[in-house]
Length: 294
Ligand code: NDP
Image 1 (cartoon, rainbow, N blue to C red):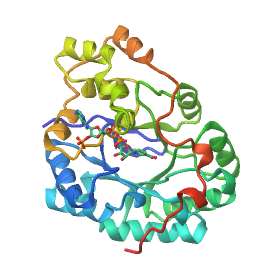
Image 2 (cartoon, rainbow, N blue to C red):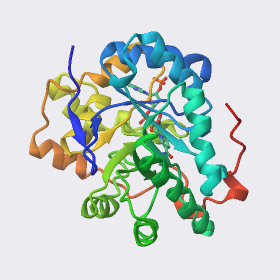
Image 3 (cartoon, rainbow, N blue to C red):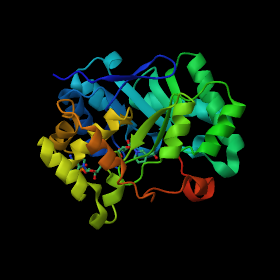
Image 4 (cartoon, protein in one colour):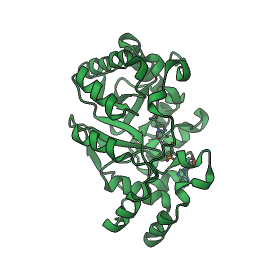
């Protein structure tokens, strides 16, 4: 079975280059998806308190028979649990639902620009959890350069990752450069452009002619080409699927190499148009919701 190449985080912890995402994976399908991924060779699962399926992620890991210490578990604190004590408690909720004592990577799901004080307090709780050995690495998601700048000015531990929307149609190169300058690993969400086809199938990255041409040249799919592109550019990728065949397909990206020309062609597909919500407009009023106790 393929051993997944690892990326080294800024604190020395190793993160498998590809992981399974479970956003919008219904709880009743999550256990099977996680189990299928681990059987296919994945060793990293990306979930979130807000996805409502942490319990089933834990169940899938246990059912797979893969030892806990061989699986890298990443989850996210939702904005409604920001604040020092609330975020410490968010760890307890997530760990209990997952059925684990430690979480490998615990990240803030969003910045709260209008309540950055709460965002900072939440991050300070992550620093405490790291110091206590309850998490192996900490990070952020959907942080823009000014959010990172404020965070770095007011806290001590540089985030290990910034998980951001990143696929050929929306590449955020300036933000990637800021991540790089600070030793923060860029982790791509919607790495095969899921966000480009949830709503408007006419613009699906999976049907882009350039990607299809490159895919054909390698006897691969457009999804595999996008994942290979992300991995060759040094990013962590976390494709989501509920289907065992696609889960296996998305993992089968270690037996071919894109040429410099092909990489440049994919780099050229950037439209600069974001698919997900604008990070600046995230507020507790519009996006807040209760995260249940374990
Ligand atoms: P992806 O780019 O992973 O695409 C997922 C979509 O593509 C699903 O509709 C899936 O359908 C389909 N799909 C998967 N594999 C294939 C394939 N080989 N061929 C054709 N279609 C395929 O999008 P996501 O938005 O799910 O992003 C991945 C992960 O990133 C999430 O699951 C989550 O963990 C994380 N994420 C984080 C966010 C954040 O704010 N931090 C926001 C969004 C995502 P099907 O399941 O039916 O196969």
